[in-house]
Length: 362
Figure 1 (cartoon, rainbow, N blue to C red):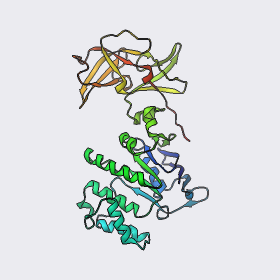
Figure 2 (figure 1 turned 30 degrees about the vertical axis):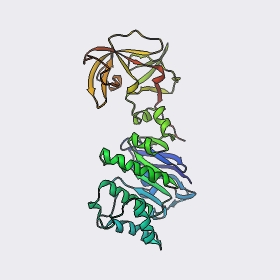
Figure 3 (figure 1 turned 180 degrees about the horizontal axis):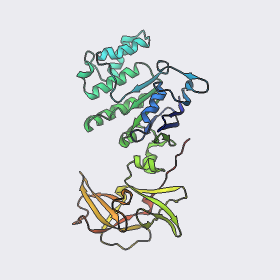
Figure 4 (figure 1 turned 60 degrees about the vertical axis):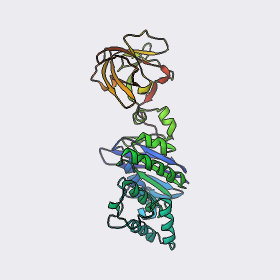
């Protein structure tokens, strides 16, 4: 089973240019708000018509601009779960699910309904209306309603975005079970990297409507290759790269950068995760194998388990966001360090990530 998408949708000031393929897996569409994640799902579901391209699901062409094929949403066998679950407010739980079973023409509607009630733990809620349900109960009912239509493709549009942290944790576990047992492809839209890492097999990063090549979820977070993927994976420190005699230079940090990985001409930035930055009081001797950056402390903030230290390299503009370096360190590891103190930020070459700015499609 597979899903192939290659479409374009032009809104003038925004162009969606999507191309990816999913095969019997849960694939995340990861990007910032407004990048085109939800629009992509709506195009696949038939709610929005692309200007150009092709959508093929399990050998069936859902959309083809050249052949003038555009199946209606009802014929696509696509289950789309919206952020707000979109349950019918004037129908009970039973009514919401039975309405779908009736449309599908199933003769064994009652048996199928009982099976869904058991599978999604909504027994005892059959006569409740959506307003009487918790967020978790609404989610389970919404997924049960989607599964009642026997979709060949399941699409979830930020289903956990409006939930508190405890309920989110509970529903992540339930979603993992649902996605793990689903026999076809699933697309999971999110801007939350933790959800993506826990629930998805591969990730397709979207940056301003453009799709990067899908990568395994763990690989993306371990070694992002572009500026967009590094930003979305939670990296906090960046500098633009300049090339001059003597090698690459981190322009925003005012140093020659040492990197264990090759920095090619297509490298536009380097990135370093905050928990890989060490802070040493005063001026430290430069070690040949490390990047030692003289800095001044801008701010120190206590988190639950760590202290976050924001510094700026000497000779740089502290108002330039790129020039600031953020370090996340264990509490109590900095002694009597205060804002305004001179320190040295130390970054090991193996922790420096070369990043491209350009987009990469399949």
